[in-house]
Length: 285
Image (cartoon, rainbow, N blue to C red; front, side, top):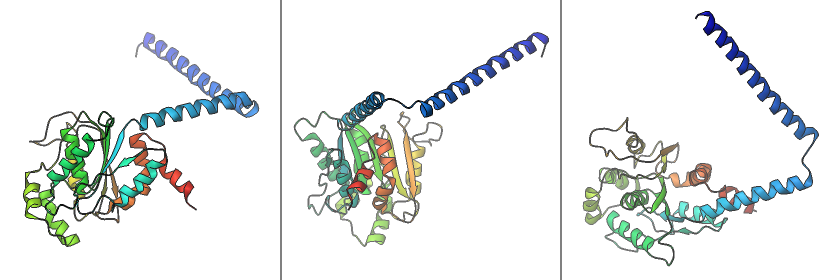
């Protein structure tokens, strides 16, 4: 370093020190003023009004979407803990959770028939079709939600998936072993035709059990990997996709629906809505 460089470096150090000193001094001064000279009643009211206006603006934004829950196809739309809990939670801020029946008593239901029912439900409702959709799905319903998002990219804002069943055809025996169910030939034949990992381009959040013995966590980790242009493998889609997040939970196996109350902070932050779970707690006796 020559003399000119050294002089310039020394001068820059003085400027940085002065700026840092000024910033610290400004912060200390502001903090001291807040202690010794609290805001007036009028200023407090003004700040409160501004906060209320910001909250109303955030609520208006949240209510501009349709929130739709896709239930696990092995259970009815009214039997899902997640569906009931979210309906109550979102109801505290006057948001309706739509819970269409994706089976409707059909003994030969398939994922494709469920997708058709979800599509029909979202195409119905006066004045609703134009509103963007936020999808929440559980287990096989999460797969249905992902397939809908893949086919309707212009309509879906975000998806929140609980234990999605990627590669469904490969894990049907896990369902049969774990729950003692027997899938129809129509369901099995349909599962073989489905993409293992739907290409969802909107933001996505997954909650998956670390000890899930039905739909392995590795499958969701693989789906997360496919979002990265640097980690994709040969044969993966090369489309640009939005951010994907994964929350691992332990001790619940495939039943991560019951972890929803504990993960509502993630849910509300993802959808940018108020902490509706806290409103529910306030209503508890």
